Image (cartoon, rainbow, N blue to C red; front, side, top):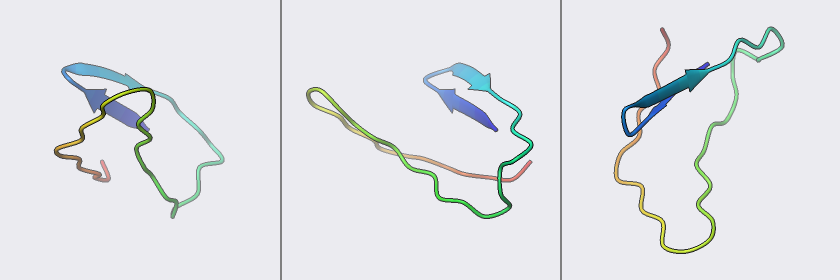
Amino acid sequence: MTVSVAGQTFGCHEESLLDAFYAGITGDEGLNRFYDSTIRRP
C-alpha cells in the first residue's frame, strides 16, 4: 500500500491485506478539509 499526501509518499507491504477492504480518512482536532481522493490498483 502506498499513500501520497501533499507531495509526501509513504507505504508498507502487508501480506495479509485482503483483496477487498474499506479505506477512509479520519479528521481530528480542529478544522479538517478533504477536497479530493483517489484509490487505484497499481
